[in-house]
Amino acid sequence: MLVVHTKKELDEHLAEWRRNDDHIALVPTMGNLHAGHVSLVQLAREHAERVVVSIFVNPAQFGENEDFDQYPRTLERDTRRLKKAAADLIFAPDVATMYPFGLQDATTVSVPRITENFCGASRPGHFDGVTGVVIRLFAMVQPDVAVFGQKDYQQQLVIRHMSLDLNLPVSIITGSTVREDDGLAMSSRNQYLSDAERSKAPLLYEVLSAVGTDLQNGRRDFEGLEAESISKLMDAGFGVDYFSIRRAQNLELPDRDCDELVVLAAVDLGGARLIDNTVITI
Image 1 (cartoon, rainbow, N blue to C red):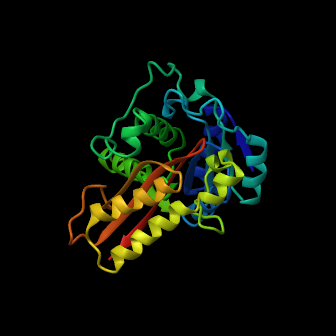
Image 2 (tube, rainbow, N blue to C red):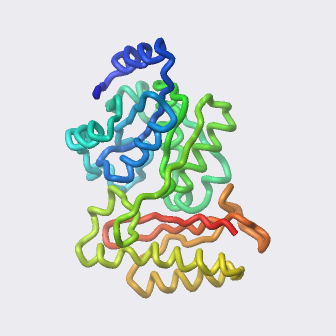
Image 3 (spheres, rainbow, N blue to C red):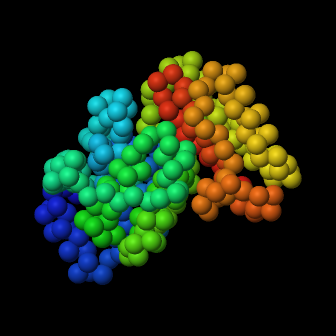
């Protein structure tokens, strides 16, 4: 497995693969990898002969007072994990490679409407940072497919919208959320939880799943379900940023006849922000 840091090195290996007519898959990450990331690499392998994993802690998607400086940088450990997962290449650029004019003068891509609520509302500028770095990676790697995780549900919708709207020649694939044995969605930020908080954290998915069951059983008082769920989480000590039932395809408000829903939530527990969701087909 190759590890490269510059655009020139990346171009050399990509050119060789393209001469061999290999399809290329990209898995964008910020590193500090866990089994969820590995599952995305494995999914990427099903769609391409070559898999590139980018590792870049993107300063543009962190707001003030967020954890950019504390976010774990674990390239050596990540390299070992990706070698076992049979990735072909790690692209680990520095900030100057990704933003040659600096962050203040960086070109941005904004996706309207779908970014206005949920994580977009509570983290202003976050999705502009996400789309900005993803479109740079698409331009550098020029992948045939790119793989993102369902846990970041709003994010993968934003990227899918951007790619379709700009006619980017890349297929977006969403991989299922990988969970711990007790249901907690795997996340690099789970390590911020204390032991007591970690034992409480699975309640988030339990509540999401219970709402999913109620919806599949025919319950349609969406606001009532949301209010009950928020109350359960707050009573257990979670700070609730949002808990909402929406149309799965665009995060618009659903009606009683909607046949595909997503229940999505973001909560604060101790020093960790946890996001999760469940998709319901009725």
